[in-house]
Amino acid sequence: LTNDSRKVKKGSVFFAVPGDRFDGFDYISKAIESGASVIVAERWPDDMTDQVVWIKCRNVREVYAVMSAMTQLLKVFHLSLLKKTYFH
Image (tube, rainbow, N blue to C red; front, side, top):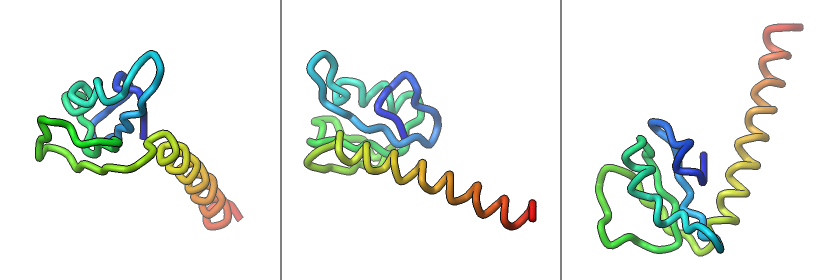
């Protein structure tokens, strides 16, 4: 998960977060070229490609925050399970 097109790797989910100085929507093409497999945006682009899965939402910033938090929780939970399973 990333909102920075420079950090996109193959299989990434790119969140096109709008901002005052930069609009993530302007970096969708770069994210796709870098290997993003999912694009989350607040509007559909004029040149939608079927290379990726498109998700449209009302507030990308909120969705990104929630998904990031959930990912961190799952990592902690997974590490907890590993410790219980393999180290006790």
